[in-house]
Length: 617
Image (cartoon, rainbow, N blue to C red; front, side, top):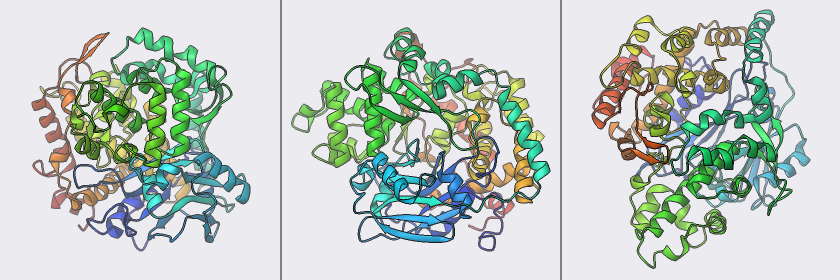
């Protein structure tokens, strides 16, 4: 690999982005055998670096970005076993191409690679298939498994990793299914070599101490991701109910009624996943694993379901089927509301699209199995709009870009890098630019202190913090570029972005841990530069697929207020000092492309930028 990609030092998904650019035939259909799946493990996974558990799945994704195009990107997932086992097998990348004649799964066991018949697993849920694979190959093995949704090529199907995490929002599960690939299983016991153990232990201890000193740690270990509710109730607020009502129906008290225990990824000091158990009602005794509370709360409000237990059951149904719960519930909200408003012509499935919980369950099963209207719903936003005579951009919550619905709405969350990367990242939404600005109200001094540990050039810092009429005190366009590069570093090393969001990450320390583990001396600034190079390969793969500036569009609904019981909510700058207009967005995008060294008219990287990064395009 070093000979094939001599300029790539990060490893992990940085290698995958360069590989996909070299291996993917331009214009190929996502379901074609030639579309490779590249599974990569972060370079620090298998060490004690806090939060180092991440793997990535890279491919051309199944969802339609518009009428014809599909984006190339990566999904990143944590997990308890998969990344750890993959690294211990001495395998940093698995490249899968072609198509099997019958259902199969792939086993990587140290140096051995075998393809097994998966006929007996086909049609089984993600949980049942995972349990059967662990029974056969050992409880310690890591498993990435698709459910019936992936088998049936639902375009927003994903794989479930170790029964707790998801891999592949926007259709990586369907790419598995197109290859008749039920699962990838990994097992290894080689261990991970550390080049400089003393230096490694020093900086791991520093990082651990910072995490242990976090003021919210006890609450996080009590509630998992549910501890983020004080932030979520603002940033993921749909605006249908009052926040007081939302707190009553889905707040901390309700979460504690179903929380069984906290489940962490390997090497995590925080632990955000949970095992839940429904104690009462129709679904009493049902158990699930993952991170259900934010998604169930937002979707419960969107779908007018006031019983949190019912939404947990719907989350479980989606996870077992291997289908993206966020996309499914937003699609349900869109088509059922449109039907009730008379926007869908009579006879075009309108009688099936009524708004009640039992019907949501029925439509979920139909979508997973592509039965009746489910065959339409399985195709995603743009094809559904064409089939039912609807415009996806008229959907009232959060918005979509490149065929993907957003989890956050900038009118509630305000404009910061996580919101911007929904638009600028080649694979929308999951740029995952988690910085301390994910929470509102951070002082400029706090933000500067975080960026100081990332090795940003002084002149870049000045550009970010020079006020502008269109972006306010924080130049979000320029800031987003650097946050995307930092995220490329985290994803390549396999470290979790939540540490950055909570102000627990010090990239200087991460650089020292990386240097100690690999023997490759890198400063934080050099890591960020390598992250920029990696991100650029991902961009180039999408430029080749026809993506340009016109595809980086903010949702129309961000330009009009959200009417909520809390009052009108507007898309505002991070400090809520100005409302962002359409003209402002264009100038913010100009800043972003300028900071990246891309052509402002086309969003294509300039030749001099590629040359400076050592890329021959």
